[in-house]
Length: 47
Image (cartoon, rainbow, N blue to C red):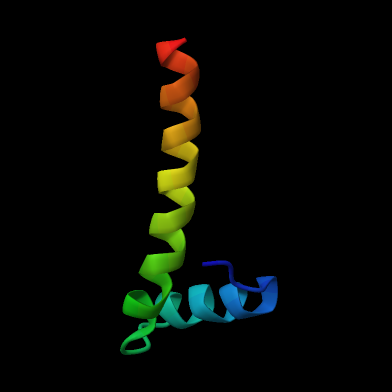
């Protein structure tokens, strides 16, 4: 699930200002990115 940079920036600002629901909207995007990074690093570590 990819999100456009302006939308991501808006979500980050909303989280920072405490907007209700912003964190819940942001989390799936951050989680997906972190999962992808971890998967790549684990593959390199195993080889």
